[in-house]
Image: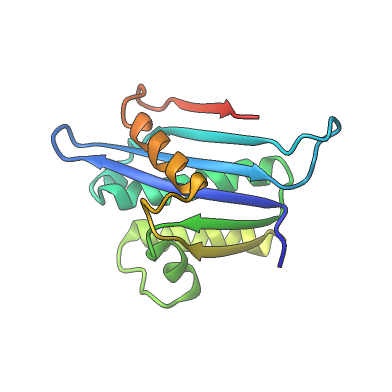
Length: 158
């Protein structure tokens, strides 16, 4: 199946200072008016204590949440999310139980977007394996740990 939008997500956590970051790389496979297939990164610091306490997994969850919100606001409906943490897909498809409030909320949010008509698929990719979108998400998730609280930054790459 071909997807109109590819999203690569990642989270980052540094034990030394207990900071958590997230990033979502959103690649559009549909050319805009100028014939450009855009690509952007949304990244920031995770401030929700429950997510921070989950270390990089909290950043992974936040990245998907932010990406889906962006897609909904821009009427992006046919998307695939590439992730290097299995739980992101397994919680949604029921393969893993949602034992924490944050994972239950995450699953409910994804299902809410699906019920609204968004076609969302999940695909695991091996982290740190030179997949460009995944490597970029990893890099920006690290940057996200360093931005001011509650700041969300967007960079248009092309």
